[in-house]
Length: 68
Image (tube, rainbow, N blue to C red; front, top):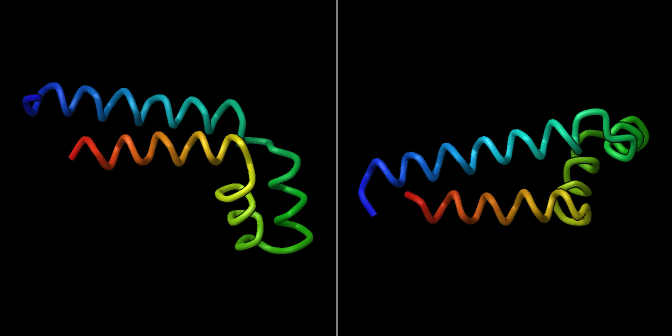
């Protein structure tokens, strides 16, 4: 895979991550509630470790790491 293909793949992954974030994470009731009740760190930890959307984001992140 040449540099151009890697760059395009990276852009596609970043675009998909932005799309997922905008669609599911912006305005998320759970995130807002956990942040208000338990703090930013807890809410972020929940999103990363327990939320199905967070799991999907992690998978795209792993793909992104593999494109370098």
